Length: 260
Image (tube, rainbow, N blue to C red; front, side, top):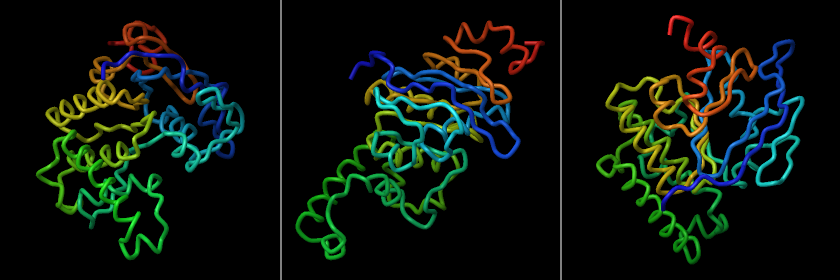
């Protein structure tokens, strides 16, 4: 499908989060439009991952609210977020290292499995039909991310860059409307980053998936993002197009460094 950025699908209003006496996020507001790639950038400790954790309900903010497709949530939780079509990858890969690539991706279909435990245990009737349908969907994702050659390989044997791709595949298996990516290119070499950037753009363009992305590589951010929000010490200091953010003096001082 051809991507066309739509109306606001996710709106965060006046979100504040603290741990004890430490303020992780202070009165942050920004929105995400349907089908866009929305980047969140900032120095280490700026509150970027905390923001994603608020969106998918891992953390519950002390103030503010999340508005998802017009529905107001004072507090989200991970199950509600998943049911609402929000999927997430993590900075630290959390795959099942002893399981194959295919089986890891299948775990992303869990919420879509309707057969009861008895049917699943004996692989009968609805459970059998359902699993075949889910496996067909997983095979589509495997083809899409070009990992056919490792589909039966235990994840623990794969190099880091391919493990990151499997992590993305598992999130895509949920068929999310909003995909949260927490530093998907951390630790990658240039070639791996180029591949991952291409896949992120393809997911956004061909699947129409809205993406919220945390990334430290400013070149990647400027190339793939429609809009960028900038955090520093838990506060929002910039928000706009990549060019607007790049020219923001406060952003230059806090994140890029005055010399840049």
